[in-house]
Length: 207
Image (cartoon, rainbow, N blue to C red; front, side):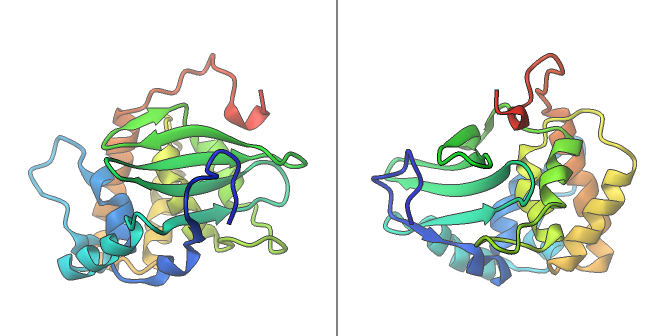
């Protein structure tokens, strides 16, 4: 797999990992800490356990195989998530793809903390709800939304966002009785850390 800017990285398609126990805890558990609750997030919130998480982390953070998660869009920009497993420089990069252009644009990264521009809630769901069946990658809208969720930098999400997030978590295997608290913690963390400046040009504009 080739992506411009990652020519030296051993990129491999990672979409098959999404259904493995432990994936969503690896991907989202760190974002469940809202700083105002004594209840510690645990993998069981995602229907997983610690052994699942440890086993899959060995795969996700393999230095010789960097998983790539593609979120193609039929109309407008899509997204790509890359596990950048450089020795001593592990992180997750978030890229946008633009129709008719071979280049990609990195808009954010996670290296123990979030940095980058991110997306508003409306921009995020615009990509999530616009799958491209003719392209390789994730097509399920619930999974797409959760993959894009770390990019959320919007302090004013609509009331419907919580219900949408709860539904998406249940679709990927989170228990009904924990999906609500998980969604609440995720939104609390993401909206609190928000850095989105409405005066900035949207990364979806291609500017």
